[in-house]
Image 1 (cartoon, rainbow, N blue to C red):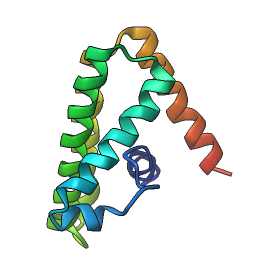
Image 2: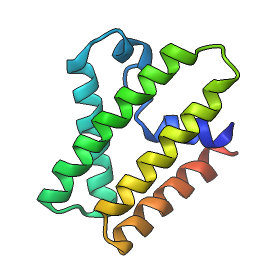
Image 3: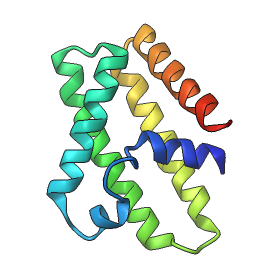
Image 4: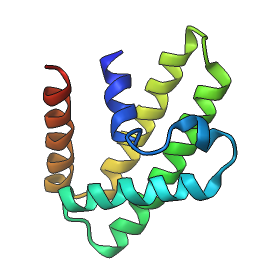
Length: 118
């Protein structure tokens, strides 16, 4: 469950909730993806091409998270489906980032986990 919480936090849940994005508000979803990408760019020092790819990936991931939450809300399969989305996201992200950038991203995730674990 902590993994799911961390994933949701990294997905930009500090911004408007997924329920709003799930209602079809594509503009809000695009804004959240842009904000998440900007934070990731500051951490991992993305170049312009990577920035565009990561932004597109973040938009897809946020859409999938909203869809999974809407479809499996209250279901025991929710955690499993969210883990699948997270695994696919991490795999795709690793194909975009250089190893040092992926290490910076991973370190920022660990920092968030340590901060929230207290």
